[in-house]
Image 1: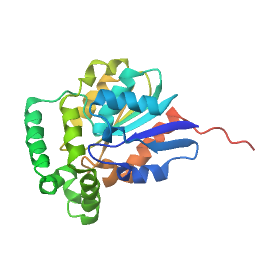
Image 2 (image 1 turned 90 degrees about the horizontal axis):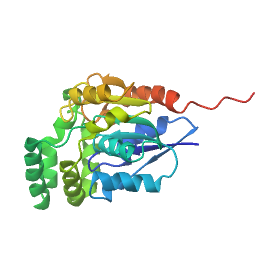
Image 3 (image 1 turned 180 degrees about the horizontal axis):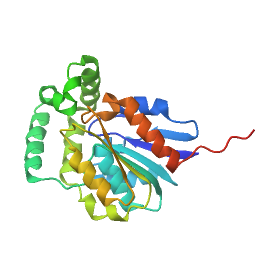
Image 4 (image 1 turned 45 degrees about the vertical axis):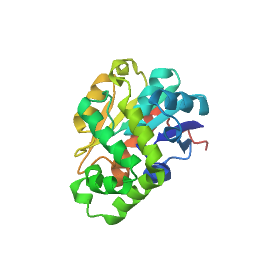
Length: 240
């Protein structure tokens, strides 16, 4: 059975993949990894992921999870049979973003996690969804559950991430690049760049969607993922 590993974003967990897990076809064995919550660098996360899930893998990562997927295919290109990269960025950290993360880390260390998250919460969603209190509270609860320690550790991992663009031209597996057309955290230009670097990659922009596309537009995301999976891991023929 084909193994598909979902990789959550910064300080998130399986909750962000709820709609996708429910839509997976029966011949796909789908799991959600938490290596991002247990290791301190993207390189360590990828090495642990590969060790804990032997054999051929299909990887689907969102945001930080997409960066992790790109590092995993760098470390073990022969084992990765498909990539889906959602709302992510192959570039290394900029100095401006590094400064913002350092300031955020200081606030997290001071115990001001909820204050900072609440202020920045609208940036993760399309403007049309910022009044959806259930959606926003679900996301906020996930990140608060992760807590300050994870937020600090994962932000530091992102600050020191490698430049994934250097190896994307060597990726051979079928790749889907998905992004919300109004993503303010990883703008569509980042996804376009990834799709242009990976030979044969497919780019899909989800309309009226922000950064949290798996939660904001689950039907559209699922349709794109299922079409990609039909190529990467087609269902076995039915026996009459």
